[in-house]
Image (tube, rainbow, N blue to C red; front, side):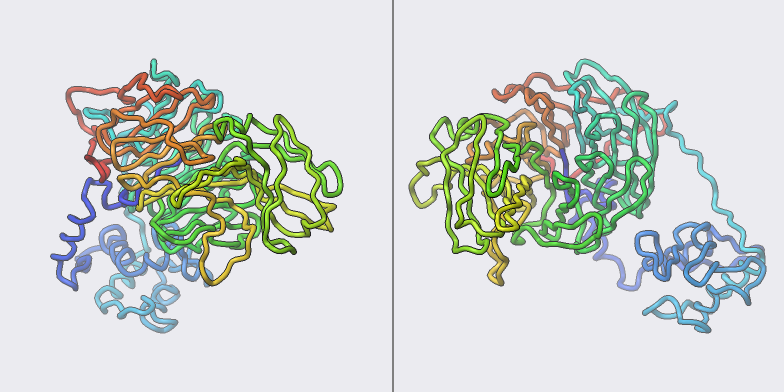
Length: 587
């Protein structure tokens, strides 16, 4: 499950709408900016005088996410450590401090590309260094911790949900915490309190031993938390970048975690050490969702720049844009269950063992396996009658080395100009060595965003890209929703998908033909999170009204609705206000 909402910007964490914020900014004078720290008698203060200058003029190019010259100035410790030329300053020795060489133009003049600092501000740096360059940043005591959890007087907006792999626990995002509930909503199990004000994404490791919580404090830091699901203890917390993180996904082998960010990048880190092994910067806008390929070797990312990109994890090599850019994207999910297991049984021969009776995907109609692609032959399809639970296929000589799409389709397709033929994607078949080597990559993803259209794609290209921007990887589109898409989820067997929007409804569709199966109603406002229980018998939703709702499947009947946080009538100090997590899109 992944929930994305591009309206959830860092400034909006205080409940300010984009239009209102833009209007306020428009009223400011063009030259408005941070006030110049005033020189005072007595020692120069790093916190009150030096840090505001660094923040206003230097932090944009010198931060951990983009450390120009390997220098970051976002904390005293990082500033003192310096960059590629050594420490930034030598306490007590202004003449030996590199930062002054750059500020005065003795070395390359900084700030780069901007006007030099006023002489009065350079003098502050000189005095501060001469006086010993002390750090007087105040140490603030955090009033919220495991022994003093958040206090709620109203339900917070719910941004993330996740069922544990064993189906016994439902993790729910709150303000600065993850709340663990019994999966049937019968009671609270534990509260996992951390530093992040907003948790945008929750994901269990494949073995269920770890829970990853990804979010941050808007405009301050991004954070990944790893929690031990047996002890409910924090295993590791890693702060990354200087804004909120989104769209966490574990690699199928459980060794790595991917996520996106407001710095237009996606990252992959080791689990649970948090060591960064990939930072992908090819997007031009916020990255809201990530997913690994089934073999954990490739990373898929979806962004507000409208692109779904495919990247090799080990090398960081960018492979392709999967889609034709049509809409700002908020959510991307990979189908968790291939429809068939693939085994090569000999030269030009392979065996498909089906995970379910695929005839049900076509309402029992006769169907066939289709193999289609460019390869080294003319375009065309070769069909084999579908047999379940298993089918052995021998490739004819016409199938040369190349990549082919393998799918299932009914023998009698619907007629009419608007008919969308049913088709179930099985994978991309790679034929090599004259047919002696065969491989099936069964990955498919669903993405959606601002235009309200869910789109299903195969991950690996089977037809050559041209300058005409054909959407070759597109398998099918689903009906346009009445509101922008905020969250998507595949059913555990991969046969259905749930689509959540900024409107008060979640709709379930069948993957093979796009048929609507159920509508889940009862919400009061936008929905930001949706998750199937691992047995596929229930689905959970959450969003603006702060309630978790559990629905029966396949009927779509509401079983239970509950507020996942404890509520108090009176708001003592440090109450977690709803304003801290308000989201646009409420109806």
